[in-house]
Length: 286
Ligand code: C5P
Image (cartoon, rainbow, N blue to C red):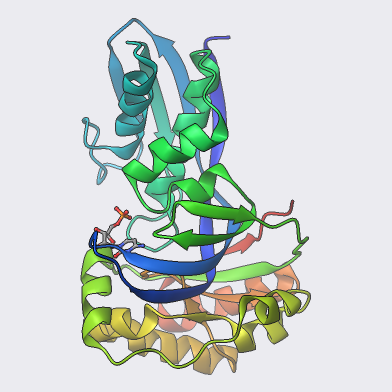
């Protein structure tokens, strides 16, 4: 076996509670996260020792050693004390800077693919430790499809709850810089009290019920930094006749539905009336 192809999924933060800043510059979180079937595709082909190559169909992404997938490959070689070469082909569908975790997912998928392709025997816990050093959202993609993430993102508790929901995604051409969103959050008054996780989990059998309790503590900060995003959120809420949420630090918005047809209806209406890109996805089942 010298080639592997894998899907690299996006995520939605169904809840995102920011517990407060930590001495290391990160923030302590508790977030309920679901993988969705909006995926990038990565093909990894064994290459001669010491060679790293990356092809990507998105010209906006770096193809040098700063790309997270190549950093993941190097981190794995360093940890194993090896010098394996690799050629990665990355087909992007997950927009960058959207809070959908595309880059982190690509790094996590690369870690687990190369662990296999190179015949390394790293445990999931070891891959999680390597992933956490690459980015706070990487560990959640080494678990899933539904999990609770704590710490700064490195503590992941996988849930076995079956969730059969669809999501309408609103993908504006706006980019939220995560550090700026967290920095703005620190200047804002503390968010209102939030429902406990148990209560949120109990609503996941019904999308409309769930949408009444889902929350994201980063929303106020992201909307403050990008007033156009606040306006868009209000416009989508008006069209949906019900609330929408931000995922991660944005800028993607979502609303959950029990069925894909209803998600398609809202996505179509938002695209037509607000002239913004939309998509429909399913929450990935266990
Ligand atoms: O780990 P990652 O590269 O995704 O983090 C980007 C930035 O987001 C961090 O440098 C930090 O400013 C902020 N962040 C945070 N707390 C987290 C995750 C990210 O403050 N739990």
